[in-house]
Amino acid sequence: MATDNFPIEAGHIMLFARSIGDANPIYHDADAATDTEPGHVIPPPTFVQASAQFTEGYSLRPEIGQPWFGSGKEPTGIKRESSGGGGGTGFHAEQHYEYHAPVQPGDVLKAVDKPGKSWTREGRRGGSLSFSESITEYYNQDGVLVVTARSVGVQTSRVVE
Amino acid sequence: MPLSKASLSVGDQHSEQVVDNLTRTQIIQYAGASGDYNPLHTDEIFTTQVAGYPTVFAHGMLSMGLTGKMLTNYVGDGRLTKYGVRFVAQVWPGDTLTATATVEDIREEDGVSLVDLSVSTVNQDGAEVVKGSATARIDA
Image (cartoon, rainbow over all chains, first blue to last red; front, side, top):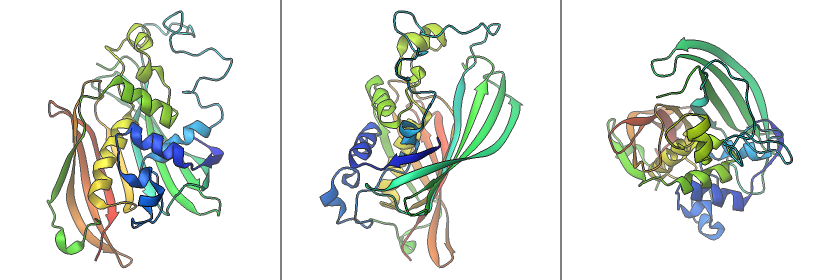
């Protein structure tokens, strides 16, 4: 999720809050937000995940002019080599945030990725499971650490039932 | 309204239904807002015919976002200091989710009053889909 330029924008916060069904005015009404404790619009607690929008080459966003693995004429736009039955999938297993300082529209965050641990174990539902952790630190335009994110991903060896 | 130390006890609970009959359209909304366009969440044909799942399913982060709405309604705006979850089970279109926070500890750290919460979100069958914890600043 690394990016040097993650602009915190009021419209983006509003769209994100709608998508999680959160009608709290602090996410979309700057006037109402002045009467709250923060005193301004703030993003919902999981908003920094949307830095994916500003991460170059993010693999889960179609790249202009490039084939995409979702369906079009065919069920997938990218034929993959058979991996012998395969069907394994990458999943998001855990997500953790620490909030250090306020964020508001107008801020421009920089996201810095740090390597984490990786480990493997046998799963009950999905065959063998390979876990990998990544840590992302979000700094504002003044160089203040505002959010630390720790993500754990898991790769299954077959379809999870 | 932020929580205050005097009004809280270990074991207190706050519950909210955070989505009723989750729609595929809401999953698409989340994809568009978050930037995670993985076809497993947005593309029925890919998901059923290529990936082998019965239908598309919600981003884990959508479940976490829905659960977070319950948390911020409970602890107040801008009060969270930590929030983390494990994605225990998939969330499918049609699911209705109820999120619950339980007070585990009320404590002081560097002169700041904090509440530690456990967090659990279950679907309409009572199956847990998200399990986690959170910490928030509270009034003394």
